[in-house]
Amino acid sequence: MPLAGRPAGAPSLLESLVPLLHAPFHPAGVAVAQIVTLPGQVAVSFVLVSVAAWRLREPAWPVAWLVGVAIELAFRHALSRPALYRHGVHLVGFDSSWPSGHALRWSLVAAAFAAAWPRLRVPLGIWLVAAVVLLELAGFHTPTDVGGGLLLAAVTAAGASELGRSGLLGRRAALRRRGALPRS
Image 1 (cartoon, rainbow, N blue to C red):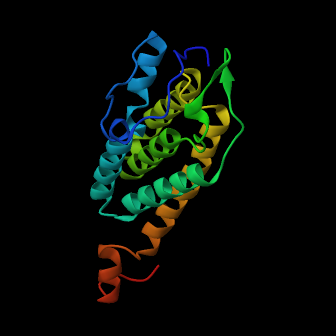
Image 2 (image 1 turned 120 degrees about the horizontal axis):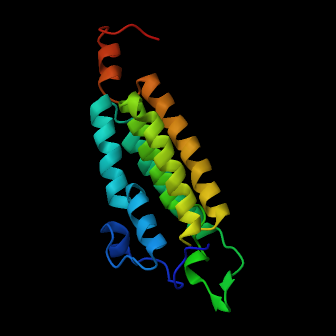
């Protein structure tokens, strides 16, 4: 974690909901990480996923976001890890940081936007890779935290895609019930 600043505790509920509230911007690497990973912040990611869902006319993405975040929170409260130390200081913020919510939510934003705007896939992929790398380099998460968040995001995004295709939610299901759309 070469860009990591001084150790910090877990964010408060308010800090989780308000983008960049009390966010550290020193050293410079942490400031860059704060901006690059902003789409993974709780409120920002939900709004972005909802925008993509609106564009797709598909409510499966916000549902997937809610399910993914609920699973993330359940894991964080159910699992414990050995204490991590840096320079003899217990890093309390890492005690329950698996899986990475930033990686989960950012990945869901990227997947939803890629579904809604396919031309953005390459830039979204590049930005997501940069965000994932910076989450670890800036000391926000350990590599295992990030890996867990990405794995949960892959499962959740696959579920959203399948749910969207099935038509169980939204307008497609209603149209199929009325016979206006053929069954796939």
